[in-house]
Figure (spheres, helix red, strand yellow):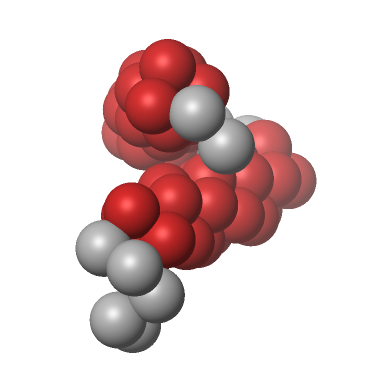
Length: 55
């Protein structure tokens, strides 16, 4: 993953979180939560690799 891709993931993560705040649909809440976890994991992995796999 590139730095630009990590920033895109961050922007999408913020969108997932925002949707979780406004949805009234339990299914959508679950979907956004799953996407948010995956995006956070990808961001974490990117920064671990950036720090020479210290994580």
